Length: 183
Image (cartoon, rainbow, N blue to C red; front, side, top):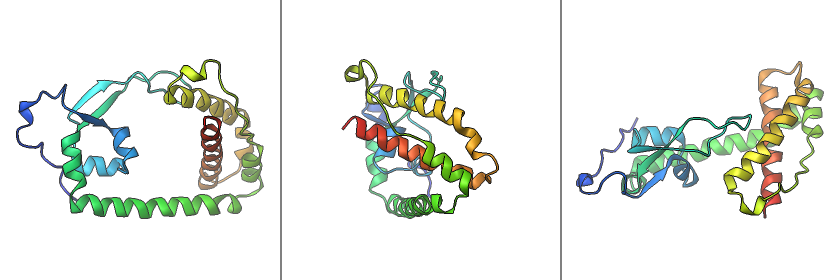
């Protein structure tokens, strides 16, 4: 397992508060996976309050955003260890996507009913133009969770794996519908 990179020399010249940093979410959008962040970067350089974190019921969660110095991220991305980890993560993602394509076919009737019962018909919320992407997603995620609670009876009798596959398929349908709504 690769060791996390030490802070670059001269880091003390620039205060951590003003140094350009990337959040863990920014890193994920750049192709990082949580294990890669942990193994290659180690602990975050600083943490800041994150008012946009919500739980599955739409309630704010007291969590902080983990920030990593951009300079350290760029150095890590230039390493062989990063390339190897990214390749391994890509292979794992391909396996997940294949399982998602094959998954619904293997479900029993209750799993199929659950997936087919989800109607991805979403409407723009009032004030959607002034909402951030996170606020829009949180709004529509609440709708999905409400639907899941009302239709959980369709998953009764399924194995844990089949239940997770059905839920993941519905989540993907919902994600695509939200994305299409704001195109």
